[in-house]
Image 1 (tube, rainbow, N blue to C red):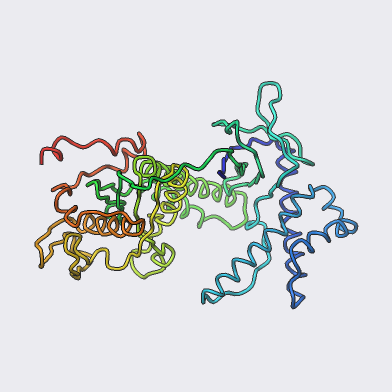
Image 2 (image 1 turned 180 degrees about the vertical axis):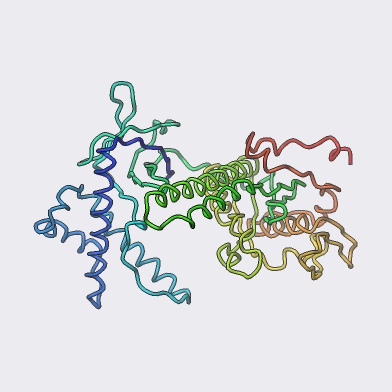
Length: 409
């Protein structure tokens, strides 16, 4: 199985300057190759372009100082971007052409297969990179012994910090998914409650208002600085640090929540959401973007694959309108938070009803027979609220705890 492990680097000043020079050389090569491809009608194969790199070195001296695999990955990066544009065009999206990369948009370089090595020098861990040298690295977690490191991407974040991301292959069999899943759950994501599942848990959306306020204050301070001045650059890093803080806390919450569902259940059913399209809808787009539903679903999918759990993404159409008990559709404005079926009388929280519909569709997709009366029989009368703060602070296992009042009711 393939994983990415990310670690903090602590390059000394001279190594940091060399890294920046290599990254900028790669950026210039990216722009050069892109300009050449724009001059031809028929784009040649990627390996043909990579084969021209040795000749290019004869008149471009800076390329001699960069490892050959790094240069090849620059070409691969261009062709990957071209492939993405092609797919978007085929899907009916209006796309333009690739643009030249300014320094602020090109911050990384990649070693593939060779040119790198993890070493232990005088009791400290270092990452050796060909034509750059040894860089102290903070290995906050061990790489599995049965893993093979395939590539390393070194990147400077807007905060100025350097990170190395290792792409590794772990020699282990993928767990088999159960033919008859017993522990199953349907999850409906939202804004008022981040996730509402069929076990009666309503996970609150994490409160990042304090972090957002600090970010907005930093952005206002930046707007008052003279663009390009030393004070402006210093404040720009503060803004970047605020962004990074918000991003880390959000991803920590999503990692813990997705890990909980992937490890505790045999089958997880979710809606197949177009997260990007939802963000682009008018009204409340900031909250939808901050919810990061797409990131959560991607995390959940690969963790389910890792744990041998069925991950089923179902058609989201009418999951809120349909009655989970009898299937009759009832229109509900967004402000109506309760489901009350005029046909069978089934009553439940709006999101809980949607979660049951999601689970029913997920079970149907994997061919599992289920009782039509399941929602009425097993849904908690009052859903158990779980604070997002508890998930962030103590980890997802706290979701298993039911309050005494919820059980007694």
